[in-house]
Image (spheres, rainbow, N blue to C red):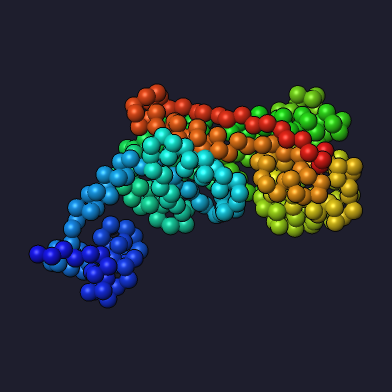
Length: 336
């Protein structure tokens, strides 16, 4: 019997090639009735199912980079996450593994999405967990594949975590503000929660206490963690206050840049009237006016550390769950 291709099956059944592919590979996106039709026609016309076995073998030499997205308020198509993804991909190739990118969506059947990842039998999985909440980790308990969570950490969870030292970075930035401005900094804090921002708050308040200041005396402005959102929020808050603090630490660069724009429109000079430090060192920090002092995150090194850790697990080395932190450094520009 001559074998039939997936393209020919699609023409025979008057379906799209993508629908046939989803059905043959047991992926979501087609109805059960369509799936049954495709499988039966494939069997009747001699479709070569060994191709699926070959694909399965290839996955044994692939690491899946699963990007978890809850709202997209923090994780999006930004240079920061592009560089992080690039670091993971390049490191995989250097170590002899393919890198396959997948997405996990909070607003979908998350348990089902994770189960499909497990069934795909990748050599290992790295989850970009920036937006993940602690209770969500329980959904990964059945994953029996080497697993690393990137860009998040939870004290009570015995998983492998790779992240930057958020507390150290925020402490360093806040200490810099105190030394330069000789006054108590305010805090431009994200109105959207992620574990990284909690750790940055810890670093901010540790620096305040180390300087002998009362944490209750630092004004806190809750702002949306995007440039436009932070701009609108800060503009409204400036209307309601007598004057802003002399200096501020911001949870990320997006907040810092948006707030700086609102401050400038309100007539405040930066850094003469108000100094600002951000966090992440996104590309825009060099081009805003004035260029933003910020905490640099070694994004490629962060991705590389996650790959190194998952390969250790694949090879059966250092199996005890570990927390790996990558240090940051302060980039001094003209906003302080």
